[in-house]
Image (cartoon, rainbow, N blue to C red; front, side, top):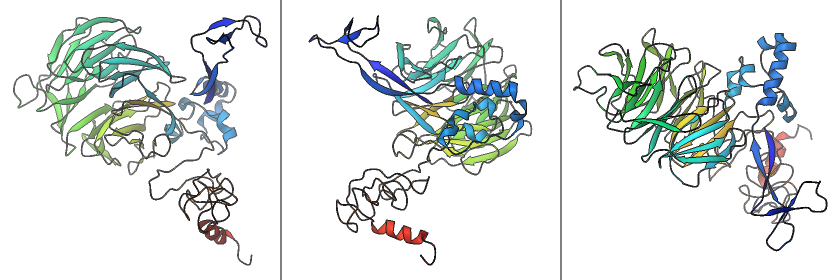
Length: 494
């Protein structure tokens, strides 16, 4: 990460000014005085430096590619970071837990879906008010907005070749968009909201799943329905007994997977008259299905708070992931590391998992400040950047948040609550400026053992402003918690 210093200037005209280089004008206010532009810092994530470093090492030191990827726990080691393609031996290093930016559109509405542009330079989000919003993939600022549909948007999908974008809305309409976001076609294959769209490996056909309980395969060029996938034992024109929440095409085979509110997941052969298999893995509605990039496993999330990995070749459950406290609403595989995936739930949490360790999450995202969850409301989607160094999450709280990989030497802060606060990091942290009220709780302290640092939680510190009752008011000093901690550290005989 680097810092980009941007300049804001209002309505002003340029004029020659002392101290400015030739040809560089200073903005002038309405009173005729020079109005110097305001500066503000914007976080920017630029992957070019680490990518160039990886290419150099592959050329000059090819033996390092097979060696384990490790970095010193020091901020100076940040310049040695490599992109996920250069850290194949360490999938956990690609978990994007570092909060970067929270984007909020001026037309506030729930962000229901999103996807990165094929080149990774921009992110497109689809909102409940039917609008597309474009965000920069480098500095995460707002770029453009467009009224795409008259109904709420629920799904977005790029073609495998990256030439076409499809969007589905609450009225059952699917629209075709070019890369310039020009609308060229519109079809209405469903009577209910289009919850998911997925292209086949050749981009000749695409599949849709809807709240009307059907899964359909459409011809992309003609825009006509090629096949309605009929479910066994159901009334005519139905694929599931209830709403279809998600559908996805296999990465390289003629096979579809669908998830439904009826608690089942189904595997379909688009050429067969009935489903190939019905999976009853969950005890509640199935909200998401995602094919493994290699196509051998199927990942599913449900309202029963579980994520399950199903081995399609052996037709058995391979692993179960338990860690969410609310229903699972979003899943996404990492584009580089095949064993890493991210998940989101209705409680606002975003977790990272490894298929080699299903017992607990590798790590989790925590919101800006001391929020315990990534979002304040349901997470409707998580999408990895094509290079895998960024993650974007979309939520009902109307925010789109960007997350990056943690840099070496950064402290990892645990979730905080109102009663107790702890910090995971160096024992001698620099304490913040507290309020100075309380014996152990919320006192200040700028120096040793103070603030967020050692032994005091938010409590007072040594020589700080806070202190507390035991330390003597505003003058500061050691409080009871700090004295006890120092006594515990002191060697015997001292």
